[in-house]
Image 1 (cartoon, helix red, strand yellow):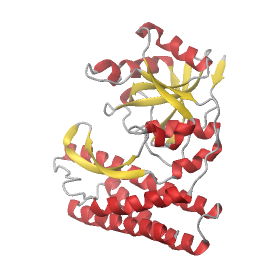
Image 2: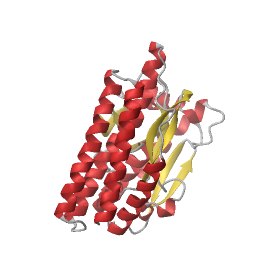
Image 3: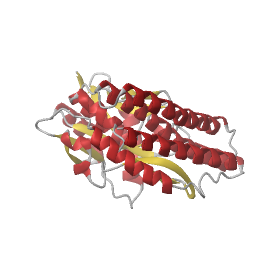
Image 4: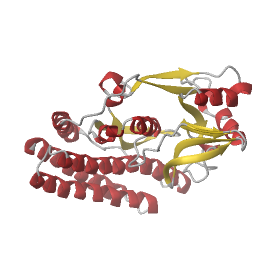
Amino acid sequence: MKLSMERKPFNEFWMNCMLNQAFSIAVSEEPSYKDAAYLNIYRYYPWEAATDKDFRYPTIDTLYYLDNPAKFPLSQVIRYIEPGHFRSKDTVLEEIKDMLKGGRNMSLNVDLYDWLPGSMAWKKFHWYHYSLFNGYDEERGTFYVIDDTLAGYEEHEVPSERLLKAYGNAEYNVNPNYMGPAYYVYNLQDRIQPYELKLSEVVENAERLVKELGAFSIEGMWNVDSDPEKRQAHLTYGLVGVNIICNRHIANTSLLRSLKEKGLINEPLHQSLSGQLDEVRGGWDLLKDRFVTGDFERARELEFASGLFAKEKAFWYTLAAGA
């Protein structure tokens, strides 16, 4: 027997594992929630590398989804994200199947080292996250998950043996201080209303971003070590942060398109904003390429990134003033 939850991966751009799976559920239920993914409810912040707390890099955080879920647009789709624990290690596979049979949207804590071939962490380093299940095939002994690899965010097939290994080595099982659950279940609202993108909310966030970008500093970040092994690890962490920023500007491009299609901004303003955003987006893409190729010069990249933050600030100012 093969069972599918019929969830389609939300792969227009990358946010983080929890958000991309939440939007995969939401957009599969009600397509209008694509616009909620484009909404400019984000902030820049410095992040610490998981294996080196002294290495800091800039990245992006989406507001509200953890600190104030009621203000997050997906609260209109997802009523409650419920933490869960298995009865025992021997019942993991059957409990997952039972949840899927019951139509429950379940996300499991796994170790990426043994999870998906083709991912950045596969057989290279241990990194923990939650992966969304989309079904299983009883006869073949496999499960279907929606997750990301270097090829993108798609559905993947995972054999039962690999699933048990990745879960067995997950942070939930190996770190006695870990406070998270074995899995989460996304409980949906009984009735899901379509999402409406509002210009007033976009402008409010644009005004906030103008202020925050004016105060944001990357001083002390991207301090890449000269030792070859540490250098590569630092470049990888830096790349993760820059990649999320690049993806956010893909979302901003979609936001402008949606505002134009809905008649919320006029064509001249759309053209002006698109030109400004293309400069910002192209700059971050160039910076991303330097992290990928290793052509990284810290002083140059810090100065270049500071210029990109200034350009983004000008972009949001233009949107707020023009709208």
